[in-house]
Image 1 (cartoon, rainbow, N blue to C red):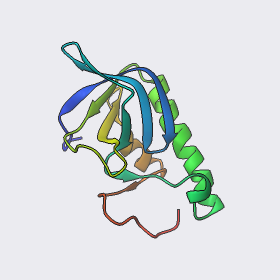
Image 2: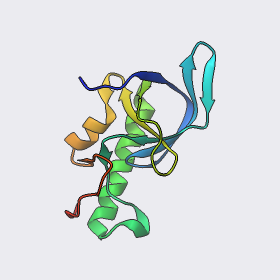
Image 3: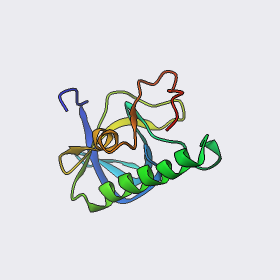
Image 4: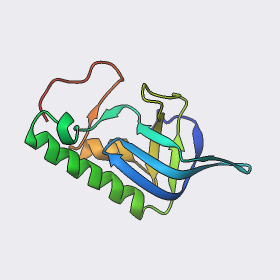
Length: 129
């Protein structure tokens, strides 16, 4: 976590996980009485398998389900979810962020268990999942 981005805030309220690298929150508490309602996040520097019709194979679709469940569980059981970023927004308007759940970087954890790959925002890998 030595390349951690500046602190942005803490997640508050309900969180809905769309897939292994995208989620939505009820609010982001930025401190000093400032909060953002219904922010959309994309975990920076990783890529997870596509879900549904976007998946190229059944294996990718199944791995996507596992990645989604892993992130959902990680966010649900954490007492504190911190958001870091200075990357702005991605091409779909989501905030590009680093997510730290009780001291564990969620992107690194997804990579460690094989549910994500490193991704720099350029062309995605063509290697099958």
